[in-house]
Length: 129
Image (cartoon, rainbow, N blue to C red; front, side, top):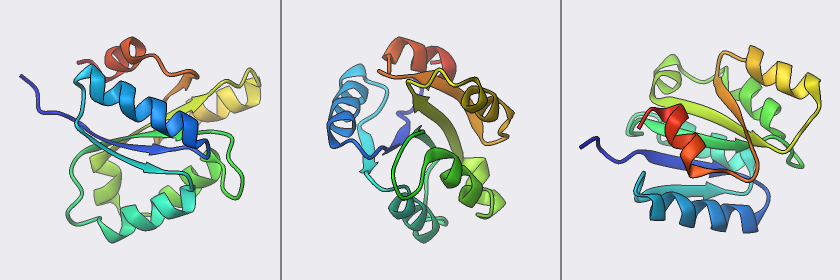
């Protein structure tokens, strides 16, 4: 059996954070979920934990005030390569804007743009578990 994954949820909606955390834990994919309703706070945490951070998956909301998902990715790009190697990022959005979709696909840090609401089956398939 594969080890459980570590997840970070970054979304300005406390409702979405609550629901996604419950879904992930109930699915058996993880028992480790850390939530952030601020992308800036998530970046600070990643930097502070860089040396001890396990391999992780980030589910990142696209549309957030203060710092949106793409701005997070721009800042993430400047973090040490050792962090990039430990983290897989999926962006979450209900966008139908082709510019956002194309930008997500073009990013070297974003594995995929997943539709909201998150479906565990889709995530499992993307993670190949």
